Length: 409
Picture 1 (cartoon, helix red, strand yellow):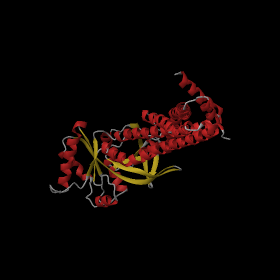
Picture 2: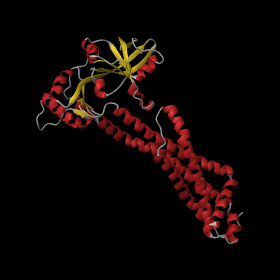
Picture 3: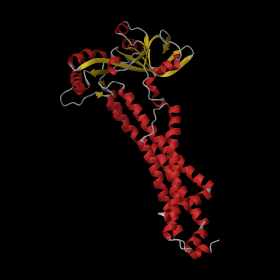
Picture 4: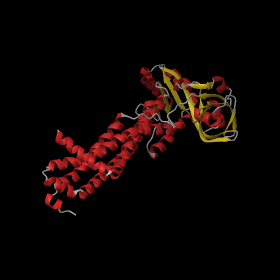
């Protein structure tokens, strides 16, 4: 035990004697580990924010749409040829779905919104029936939501998302203010509670809700298509409610028994699953890049250790001539490479957990909590890389012939 501690002391002394070189070697490892922890934690934080945002649509809710989710242009073009859903289908769906608590509709348009000298381009203008609020489970931050009287009279009233509120009215009362949507003047009647999710998902708060009847009058489309939104009486009955809606829709669209559905029913968890499938490859890339930097740091350690072996050839020869065993030389140089990587890993973990978390929380407004996965990946891989890339220089040092080493100039 004393021998191993003595070798460890020799390794630390050798590193301290070349402080600048050791510092620069550690710096590369620190940057790699910090990046791993920061990126892994950010990706996990974004995933959590995304899940919260999607689930804010209401766990009991689902959407019936002719388009659905498609991955190819062929699928998109095929779905464009499908029959449209219209507002007139709502009473039939209500009657045929006893397990539905609410059934509503919404339509979309992208328009410019202005208030005095400010402008927001291509904001989602959503025409909605007043019961959409109950279906999605969203909350009102101030004012009120759309009413059936607003819809009946086709009033030009606007319920705005938190992002629109911050852009136009932060610090002032927005209620009663007049905004212009594609040249039409609307009175602001309320503001939605912020969905959140940080800068990466800020678009979820950039919308304006107006009565569906007003939307279809001012921004008409051929056939006035809508998406049907519904909520089940309970989460346990959601699947049965979806089946009931499917039967009604197939009947209204006159589909034969053997025909496939020419519409899609989408749930919040289905949307999340689709997004996860798309982003999975990007997540792998984001996490792989900093891991590559750690490997590069390991190569730097190997190069530095090779230089150290060359510079200390005479020292190694003297130690061997005095009786130092091959194993002792091997262990000392392994100690040196592992110490460098361990110090770099520890500093990188500290920076990734505290400094990285603080900066990313401030800049991206993401709830970034350093994860166990990120810490294990960063610290574990840095240690393994230091050991792996230190083996060759250590073997080379241990295999030097003492006579040739003593005569080395």
